[in-house]
Length: 296
Image (tube, rainbow, N blue to C red; front, side, top):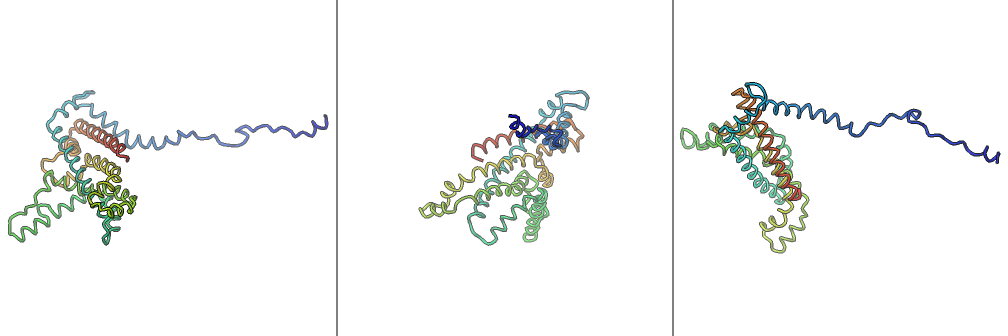
């Protein structure tokens, strides 16, 4: 018995964390603190200041009077109507034009098709005022189209005077935001099996029927995603309206600029900004619901 006890190996005692030299593990939630702090400092804090200023009239104190004054004013109601109808019309136009152009690029072989598809990615990086400036060079009062008309006919001015109207703003927004619809559509079309199209065509299906029954179901999620993005961007577009110089076209972003810079009405500008944010978030949430139901 004594020899067996002497032959038994000694028991090892577990080492404490301190004696092993291991460092304490950082909690997972701690890694989220730096990005949350940056987000709060860069975005949430300025937004909170805007909301706070919207409740502080020039007379001092805290009151709902700025909201009562702005929301009841005819200029705000007109700006809200203008913003919504231009954003909705531009979104519909971009969806229709983007769908047609993406169909041509994806399914109609032509020289330079791949280069055009790559150019769309580059186009997305262009600032909106650049497109507006190009339209002014072509269709402006002293643009190329009007200059050619006056040279040929001898008229005092050309017929193209629509850029300073709501239709000019609408044309510029459709032109600029159509590639934002085409990009997800081209990605969706690349996943369609061309054998399905060939089978449908061999069975006698017309191109319109193939688009409606084969291509369109695959494109609905991309249309919903692109449409929601374009709608939100159009609601907050400022550069296009400013550069066209459209007379009588005052959107919510333009009203913020007018009240803050031209009228020095900072509480009123903050009220309009808060409403603009709420409208954008609300419509974005609505379109996200549509996107989920469409399978996006």
